[in-house]
Length: 92
Image (cartoon, rainbow, N blue to C red):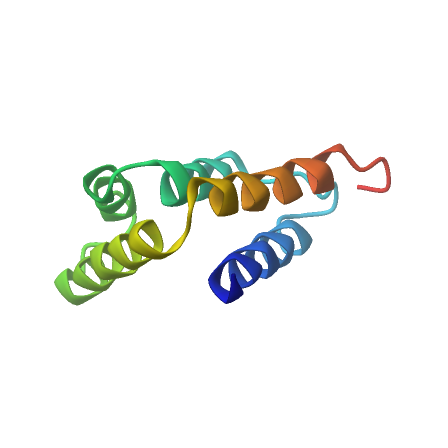
């Protein structure tokens, strides 16, 4: 559950740094979606569009595999739900 909490905090931080309207940048939104629900190959391919360092891509795959083996589907749904609640908040 600690990893899920870290993901939620990461999502909140991304929201705060995404600009004046609090909306999530579409690139970040897709990244988070693939990170939570995509395959390791899909996620690494997406990151490779923006980063070509082999060490970074190797680490990306390791982190994604760790997340997939650690978080339950419920944990991933909860993290996604928090992001959706923040996006729906009228104060943003």
